[in-house]
Image 1 (tube, one colour):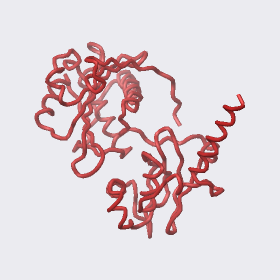
Image 2 (tube, helix red, strand yellow):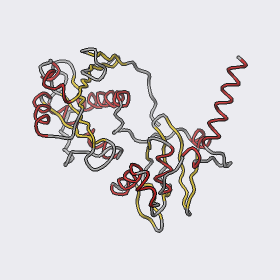
Image 3 (cartoon, helix red, strand yellow):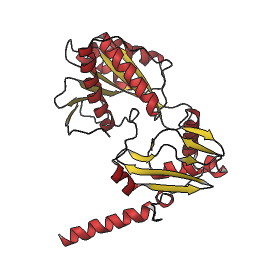
Length: 299
């Protein structure tokens, strides 16, 4: 797993509204993020950042189910592209774009960033993309490509902090920590393996999921039913014999979302996920909480 280095963010709320225009800067980085709701574009488009070259994300609700979808684009400058999407693209409700100081980014740079972001979103499969095509990466010099990789890494570090997780692949801990935290979910002849992480609940590659869903899932847990169908459609779940198999490690928002997809029915993940000794996740967490309380009382 890649190591993480501490960093700090400075978030400037321009008009005092936490949901309005925000400028995000990262320590020791040339870039900045600009975040705003769609409704504010006419009022803020004259800011200097909109006249700069950058890469942008549009986020909004899906038309065919629960959750959000994403569009990735680039602009030289970004302002006219965002105005075009304001007029022509209906789904998005908020936007974030990344720029740098004057002359730091050019058209080829942001084309590289756009291509990389689309590729990563397609690999993670955590949010549907409104993009139709995969753009080709431009040819950059070795030095420019290295600089843009650093820019991309910093950008990707900021996105989860501002609530955008579309590009995150599941991250496995070390082998020993994995063994100590591995959980199992069983049902109808299948077994899935997973663990809790800072990203959510990770179900591991080669875990199984049941072949068919219970009628109650579509009726009473439609969001989980739709998620399962989406994972089948985008090949995270692949049919193999009389069950589905996870083709990659996949991050779910909660243990219950993971167990519901695996078992094909509404379920309480804190009861369904168990360790090798048969202790439920709920029991494990209660024991951990008790140990922490005991340590605090003894301090």
